Every structure is written in C-alpha cells, then in structure tokens.
Amino acid sequence: MSAHSRTEIALITGASAGIGRAYALQLASRCKGLILVGRDAEKLAQVVAELEQPGLSIDSFAVDLTTTEGVTRIMEAIRQKGPVTMLVNNAGFANYGKFAESDLDIEMAMVNLHCNASLALSRAALPYMKNEGRGVVINVSSMGSFFPVKNLAVYAATKAFLNMFSQALQQEVKANGIRVQCLCPSYTISDFSTRDTLAGSDSSKVPDELWWTAEDIVAVSLAQLDSDNSAVMCLPDEDSRKLVHQSLIAQAAEFA
Image (cartoon, rainbow, N blue to C red):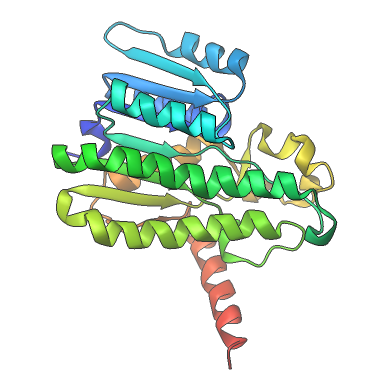
C-alpha cells in the first residue's frame, strides 16, 4: 500500500491556492482529515467549501507562518488535531530584485517561512509519525534551488536549504517508516507569479512548454510516493532532471 493512500490526517500549508490547494483536492478522498493552513482567510474558506464531503473532517487556520505566533498556532494544532500522518510544507513566496537593494524585512520573512516554519512544523509532527511507525513529509522546494538565480538570491538559497534538509532527514527517519520527499516544481501556473513581490519579473519570457499546472505537479509528487521510487528529490520530468544535471556539472567546474 502506498504511503499517501494510508494517510489519515494531512496538514498542508499554503493551502488556499496553487500547489497547496491541489494537494488538498487530491488528498481529500484519501484522508480522514485535513488541516489546511493559509494566510488568506477568504480563499481558504473557498477551498474548504470545495472539499466538504461526508466522512472528511477539515480544520482550517488563517495564519501568517512568517511569524512566531502563526507557527506556534499550527504546532499546537498538530498536537490537538493529530496525529498528522502527512505534512506538506508548501507555503512560500519569492521577492524579485537585487539583494543589496531589497527590503531586508521581506527577505527575512521569506527565510522564516521557507526554512524556520518548515523546520518547526516538521519537528512538531515527526514524533507522532515515529510513534505511528509511518508518515510522509513533503517539503516543496523549486527547480530554482539548483541554480544561482540572479535577482532571486534568497529565494533560491532557502529552497536549496530544503533540498539538503530533506535528504539528511530521510536518512534519519527511514528506519521509522517515514518517507521524506522534496518536490522541486518547474514553472507552475498559479497566483504565485502574480504577487507584488515578483512585480519586477517577466514570466511571459518563459516558453509555454515549460509551464505546469499545479494539479499535474502534485500528481507527479503523489505518483512517486505511490511507486517503488524511494528517491527524496522529485522533479517533474526527464527534461527537468537533465537541466539540473547540467547545472550541477557547471557549478562543480567552478571548484577546479
């Protein structure tokens, strides 16, 4: 039986739109309960309304995970509403521009969200998963984590952190029956690229064939969990893997 088909309660951050919403929609029929976390209360309520069905309990929390208060509330939700058998650390944003000219508060908030919140929620959920002898942690990274991305320096760095954390964590918890996946989406159609913090970027230059829907990205993630492929890193397709391979070779050459 696959890891995700045995899920009882899934906690998804950034669940009000995009990849987080797609996880919620695709996991709803496989779970007894969902804990949905998002910053936009109105959008979160719309997702809850879409998902309501007999036999599925849904708890939603409109909180800001860039803050200590927001993270603490969700850590407490894990204690009260769990045990969580799947944790999807998906909430995120990017800030486009030169780091030396950027708003440091925004950059630090990004670090808090991508790194600190993911660490805190994983640390809160893992003891319960170890007691259950099963569980899944999905950290949503990015294809950008493999490239030194000009004007997105902090974003790419925080996602690279998730890559290394995920791979090391899997080594630590594999014996406990816990799977760790680090999903690295390519360009994804969602409201992510339309946010104010990405106002300076031009996504229209990206070829159409490189864009994925959030639904297809999530389907790739869950299919890998459902397969015999136990790799931690999950990229959407062979072309993506080739691009990453080429980038890593080019970066390694700089050490010569």
